[in-house]
Amino acid sequence: MDTLTLTTDRFRAMNTDIIVSLTVEPHPAGLHPAFRDARSWFAYSERTFSRFRPDSELSGLNLASGLPVKISRTMEEVLLLARHYQRWTGGLFNPGILPQLIQAGYSLSFERLPKAPAGGPGKADFESASGEREEPGPGSWKLFGPLQAVRLDKETQIDLGGIVKGWTVDRLTGWMTSKGITAGLINAGGDLRVWGDADTPEWEIEIDDSRQPGETISAVSLRNGAVATSSVLGRRWMTKQGPRHHLIDPRTGKPAETDVLQCTVAGRWAAECEIAAKTVCLLGSQEGLRWLAHASPDSDALVMTRDGGLKLHRSASPGSGRVWKGA
Image (tube, rainbow, N blue to C red; front, side, top):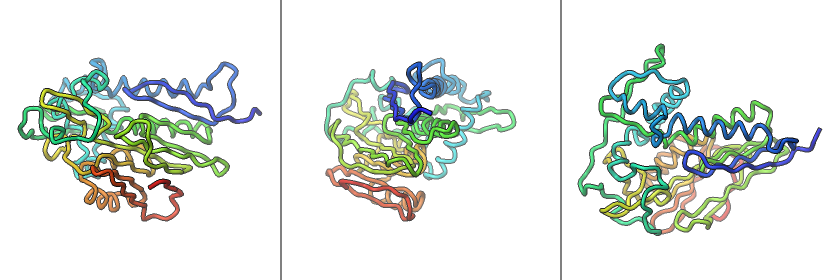
């Protein structure tokens, strides 16, 4: 048997950089077939869930708002998971904020938007594009399980970008491990999962500084688990009224006004860490970390506040195996 080696593939999908690193045997045709499967899976997820593709299943669902629509098993699975996390966060995770995202100027894929200047957010980041308070949409839907169909509330449109990257990573991780790949990393723009066995060295995940791309503020070592980061600086764009960011607070319908610049959560699943990090950002550092301690007691969080300070919240559950550096 050939010696297992760590092999890495990098590509673009879902408007972000994807990194897949797997411990596999060298393949005579080049990349191991598992890497082709990974590319296919991300492409399929994008075709299904992108709100920027008029031919995606999500776009079709949004066009039929108010009418029942037959959906794929994949869409059904993600909508069920989204409903779970909507309850878990008390409504702070709300896919129904798409109209508010568009109102704030996020109407095109991010790389096509006018970029906001570097630096911390100012008051303009938190005001609606019209200068007035925007009321959040109803953001609700009804699933018809036996019929495999869904009906969005009238005038509701949904954006599943807040869960799909993590879900895609989690599902692919499960598939890789079922195929006997004993160690690997799958990273979709910072939402990532790692796994390994007792003979596998721990992965060291560097946490980027959203204020200064290329700089790191900390690192966490772990053998199995997930890490995700959310930031008010990661996706910002310019409007006629000034800069805006993508973290919409469903309670106001506006970009969140928060003392948190960035939150990284380390836990079990990428989708859950992704949603938890956004929830902490929306709630603010004090209330957000209290919520996390109750809602996900086996998760860690590293929070950067607007004054540049760092707060490390450690899991109350023993045996996580995570080691933080520089925080």
